[in-house]
Image (spheres, rainbow, N blue to C red):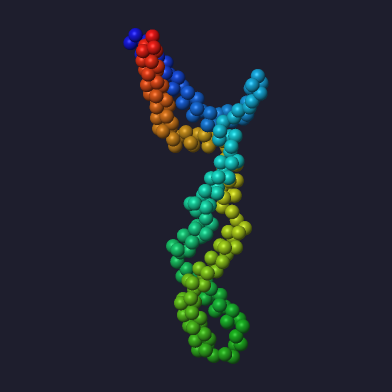
Length: 200
């Protein structure tokens, strides 16, 4: 009687373990649809079959929940020192003044203009540059979709490579799922054995 329960438990463990292995494999395999003529159905791995939907969802989640074009640029602006940009602006303004102002204007007057402009660029430059960049980002955000870029990149990615990456990352967890299937199958086998003994 005990042997019967052990046999049922071992069979249950094997069924549970193998079922979970097959279920994990079916996430990615088969890569291409396979027809079963007698049943009139086609089946394909979950990820290959719904690849476009998955790519679209990931892109939308990244853009809406995690990261937008604005977030990227704002992070850049936040950490950026604009002193070099302000220096280049000042140099360009200086060149324009030198070109446009007549040569008869005294150099002391030109210097006063330079000093005034330099002071204003230093005072207002950061704010003006940030405003300008933000306006550009707002304009770019309407034309460039981060979600579409992510979706496109995922769709271009080789499905076998995605499978390899997922398995490499989640190898430990997938192994736990396989073992858990065996453990649950073993427990169910014992319960079945006990039920059979009670009925008999």
